[in-house]
Amino acid sequence: MNVNKKQSMNTEFVAVTNVISNYFDGLYNSDTAILSEVFHPRAHYVCATDGTLLHLNMDEYFPIVDKRPSPASRGEKQNDRILSVEFAGPVTAYARVECSIATKFFTDFLTLIFVGKKWKIISKVFHYDIIG
Image (cartoon, rainbow, N blue to C red):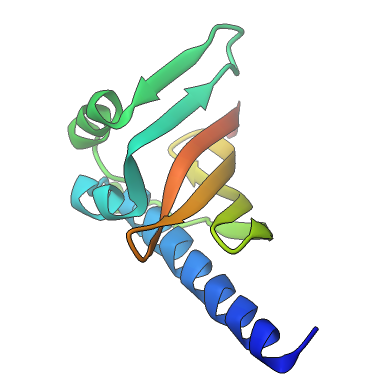
């Protein structure tokens, strides 16, 4: 790999991990202003943990976040990890991350795209386990 391509990939990796860090902060603080910066407006939120399909768009998801007490306000420990980030080209990335909110421990698969000179999450597909 040539030096310019390697530097570009490092720059994109940092950009993607910054988006994910903001994603974690948005969740921890139940802050949809932050989340609206990291999610593409047409993003999908998908889960089937309980055996039924939950599929929301951002207009449906953000009011749920707005209504719940934030983990920060409840004094919960912020428990976030980026497990992996992979690129499928210069404008597509995938991340596997973990976080927890209240008694739920989440594994999220985030797909990101580079549009409008910014990385945005275009899909969040996740599973959760009940802990504690």
